[in-house]
Length: 374
Image (cartoon, rainbow, N blue to C red; front, side, top):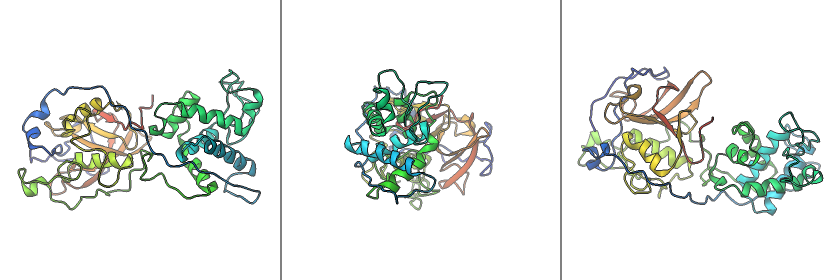
């Protein structure tokens, strides 16, 4: 780790490839800083994901007086039928929301007796095809039966609980755009919560959704001393195993937060992130760490994904690179990244945001709940 800092463009301006980011963040183990970070890392097969706890199934009771703004009684009854089918099959609250989301995206929560150009034989709430997989015509037109068949198919998708909701729905429906359902997720959450007989939240659970990462500088250790203030030999590390207020510590905090771990003991640590127990390390080694863990990477910014700059890329430190987090994706070919230690002194080791062109970073490192939009 070097104490040299490099100038950056002002916050809010797109970072050009020639612009220097501040130095890459240090890791907890000084020995790695002395050279091991440059070693070739052995990439192991990915570990099997743990089963997620997505909360208990919820049930609903509605009558003619039940109202949700923007929805008719017919739509509410259909939503209740979907939630009820999930309850019968012990589907979690998140699974029930996914089911309602898909029905919103396919039919607007209406039992349609017609299909479309891509599927003229599609029928019902879920636009299920007449291919034998979804039962008879009567089954597809019945809200409870069609929902039951959808739920069974969803439960048959390996690891669906850890997928982003739209991706889980797409694994069942197999429509052309895996992100077709994304815009219906907020309404699905609203409907299930409004019709539920119990209050609940996905925040802080194993099924927290990437992209809901907090607001601004919520890093828990923002006032802790940096290694520059205490000296590398006596510096303290955060509960995540990284030096306080470095880019890697903030990024690993965001990973934990998005995966539902917001207090000690944290799920993802510098020393235990990789299945081979090698340290996740400095920014230089994060792409290799993702590969070793079997988590996806790509070239498309996704809210909540880690932004990885190889050494020298986009003005990153020539020895250690840099990591940040995608805060917002814009329509003009840029995204807003957030992070720590991305500005020159005296604003180093603090929170920053900046707009960046999508082509500048070396890669985007996704959580296991995300994948690149093709």
